[in-house]
Image (cartoon, rainbow, N blue to C red; front, side, top):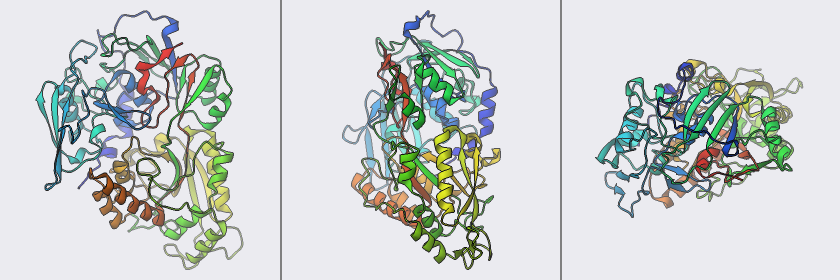
Length: 572
């Protein structure tokens, strides 16, 4: 199956900047009149303004958090990984007849039936026209975006007012969340301006709600105010009448506000805050039932500043023995226990989450002496005894080239990650690898190449951050991180520029609804990733959100943001 990730070419930092300059008020003449009492109001803390209500543009997390307040998708995923309907009346399956497979042609079609009782805040019904409008905006080659599986879709057609069919050119196992989930909502055809484009349209900043709340105002850099949507389709919900999303950049200030009862939600808290709140009677910590985000090393196999590992191999990291040695030299348990308070779990394979956690991949041993031996074998020795190895017969560097690289992480995670960065540098220093430490803003690290993105332009040696796939299907994530196509800047996140033909063929094989076949394929992938080490997975980081003790129903999840079920929250 041929795929063409257009994500990063379209989701540019420039687009986000343009969006941030658009003035923002509530949708005109549609916000409900309300005078909520303080007892039915809550405050959610965020570190920065959401760039928009469209997570497909920048995916900061803050955008998805506020999207959940005002917009619905066809489906969503609960904290246990179960897909449930939102705008959908039911989940289409092969058994129900909603999914029709043509095994000979390798194609499928999915028919969706929508609820008929959902309205936009202005009283108009949410219909199949809105779905087709959203799809047409997404797939526009000039102003659209990428969504998982987009290149497997031949067409989306309206059947009737509340029914539509998606015709696929291939078997796409992630079809249930293709028009929903963590990032994608359905947008109103009668309100959004298609000519402005999916990435930049005004309604991305001034949404028309079909969710539990309605945007009342947005004062950038300070707060957003949402009021209860009286037209929300679930009777009696939400119980909360007013939500204030308050911008508080400083992590310690957010923690103090939670401890003093001045706020009700602080999302994505780090281990220090988890520890500080463990005995609090005012604030509680919700941990997700499962882990998703794995702290990992991204190693550039192309020379720093370039993006083609075959034409310009990295003088150090292009050798698989060096990558394996780096993995052996890092004491994961010490980092987890001393910095992350034992709240993480060591992980060394992408396939650690149910239902695909059945591959027999032994955990790599922490063995600094074995790491030194591998480096010696690869031609890296310390002949002048200054503690830093040099190339003496190595594969891709000039004679005498020092084993000296830059090691980057992102600032927003806070102290635990910077301490991790420092400790890893010490560990690698003990085996003769010298690292210079750099901390940058995530927006610079992850931006597209045209906007100066460090990773997409290949301007790094090694960096460390946390990543992992949402939901229960890793297929698109594996494609995006490891496929040959995704090694091209702007087409994915294969930051190593790692290319493996056998692995690429296995990715193709994984796009099937045959779960037994998928399991077998994933285990073959796991073995190759273990041998080649294009990324080094270390340990999961806890996914946690703080909430006030007066709130009931808050449940952290790795499959969405903490507001995934805000319509169900109750105030004691």
